[in-house]
Image (spheres, one colour):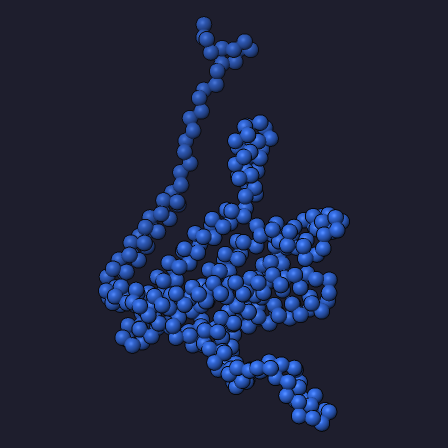
Length: 323
């Protein structure tokens, strides 16, 4: 008598013999990628146009390192100014005042529409418009002529060429352009916050500036931070555009100068790629941890942990969600 017969007379089912699914296309793709990678590595090693010895002799030279520092300074300053401008412009665009909203829209329209390279060259030539920048009562000479008097209400002035140096002109071009992009990023973040929270805060008597600072902007940061990190990386790369202002102590300008002086242009272009890849890689690592910091309590992992906590999986798990 068989022991595998159940009470209903049916036998125990045979074990399932699972056969793994074959993926021949996947292996072919891997083989093709390996061959292409080997061909690329072989080209890097054997092609004499790279001039690796010359490249490594110059990639860490003093002018190039100073150029890298200038690029980092431009990135930090342009992003600080751009983020501040972006927050102000985003609040203006969401304002019920049509004049403020319209002015912010015109700003964003202009600086998003003109390429940054054109802006850098334009700002580098602003000295053509004015030889001297003066501050004081607007239209003072015209008002004086209207009343028949010689009116000069200028408080102080500076030489435009001195004020708008290459570094300042390039910084202004990059920062004002970034302000337009950041305005859209911040506006999207603000609009992602549940309107009910703002309405509840207003019902409690909270004024609009305090509401933005305490309720809306902290919650919008989770949406604002990832694209801001992306904008920072893009800004670091776009600092190479100030070489056309020109800013002579900038990284790309220095590498181009060394290449033109030694007739070794290609190795210096490769050196520029290595520098920008290294710096953007550091920024990407920082962006990863920043996003992780501001996305606590959100995403699939947080949902799983909340589910485990609600099912009584233990207080330690719930503590990890809120940490």
